Image (cartoon, rainbow, N blue to C red; front, side, top):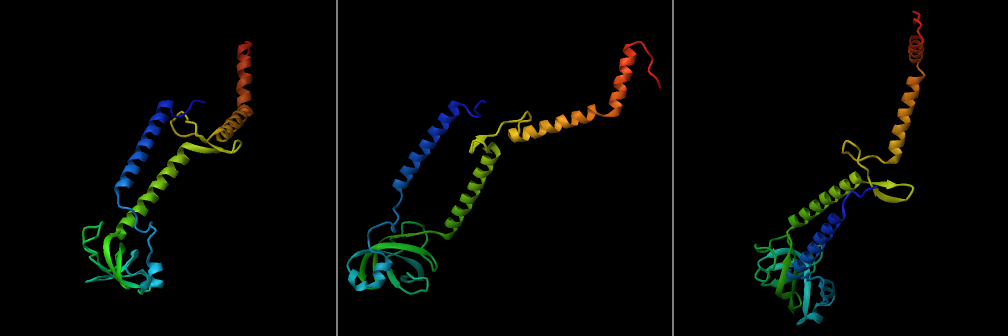
Length: 216
């Protein structure tokens, strides 16, 4: 059985994938690192004993509950509040000032038990998260659909194998379905052969070839 795609197509696909991988690595290296993936103390550490971290560099993440000055709540209940100095000026993502309800992560020096001198801040628009989830779901459905259309499960080998193409250009259902269609065809042929009218016509043709006249 011939392969559905040639060797050149596989090589081209490999080159494209490697190129995309390199491009993603370059793009990721040019973006701002995730402030949460650091070894600095975070809001959970600072909340337990804030006085012990005064003068240290920390990372605080939470929801904006006030904008003048910017105050975040590091707990879902609204407690664990910290004032972020110069948060809007140090914001690295998003062009607009912070608003109530925004999720923000800030890195800087804790100048007081509840005040952070911000050196860098990141925020993400909730619409970006929804867009990412929707696009990921659509992409996953597209991949699954194409896979099911062009591949099938070989139960004997317990593996995925390419679907064979029928004459009409549509994916074939495999040997099991072809065998079923062949059996149906043989059954139809047998039924036609056993038809009494077919036998009568055959006898009439024999008499005609023998020189006799067929009887009415």
